[in-house]
Image (cartoon, rainbow, N blue to C red):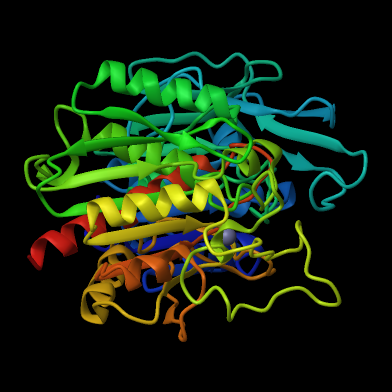
Length: 498
Ligand SMILES: [Zn+2]
């Protein structure tokens, strides 16, 4: 990965949405050229590290000097090309495959390398465009995907992903001299709007080639039922002796709230929670993978399990996770139920009743899930408590705590996440990098988990909001990566200040 890539888009739509979004992803090092007019000879391209080509109309194809693009790759550059021009300039067939929307074309990953990082062989990720360009899932529609049928691999050419519709190549890597070309179907895909199924990972493989987008991200094929998730936690604890699975107590529907822990309880401790709002479910997978990474033989960033204690509760609200709602089984918003400034919280409108958006319960800590979290905070006296949500891009911290430490954690993870992922901000049409630049404290205290932790003496407790609440696992590589990076930043910064 070059330190600072210099990227050139060659397109006949140099101001289109694709160009705008690439400019958001690589703000300081991106140039968009109209190849119908601009000089893009090998000489002109030599100042860049990466060239992306997108020909949107066949009438313009001949104006793209693909020989110059190949020469650029030969001399060591990285090239990303749409399948249309790649196929035409290599004499390969191209198929545009249309299906009804009951069949959802996807890429089946068939090789693992830096470009497919985050996925394993056999993983499937949705990959399609829509004839109508209508947003998600609202009307019956025709879906389509471009692919190169009958392509065979060679010493130079690897097929990284094939179509689930008729097995043509959709993701291809070709070694060219000292560089390489990644050819993939970008043109079919719409922009990765919120809860997009067909295009959630539009910039992921491209980003892996250009800037190493995926570091710790991991794909999970489907959202597990709660009991399956607990079984997965148990399987991890079986496989990795450093991990301990604990049943922390029954939740409001009677099933156990479970945690994974590792390290030394006498050392600085970290408590990370997910899915206190059940519908904000994706972060649970990030915490699960964090535990897997830190318990492995070779933990990331040389972190020694001798130097800290970690407990993750990936799903604090099993009922809400399973039913895809905010509340627990009693209709309580658990993050308004903590024994901290509970009296002062006024919710509701005319009435204030269970299942209202932020119903705080009948009494402080009336709910078993709340009491479990409070007990863990009192027992472990953590240095850091993180509570992961998915309703914005922001870091929030409570009325008291070590502000310098919180700022250091924020600075660390925003640096880690720079120029890696792009998505719509939740509840907004705006696209932005998933690097969570915004941060704020909120005072006075509220009956929130992090405020309770702050009152109990936790120096660094914070809420992390990112994109999520999606209907399936299509964006989990990004979510998992973000959660792991935020957690690693928190651990590293807290340990560095001891
Ligand atoms: Zn939330």
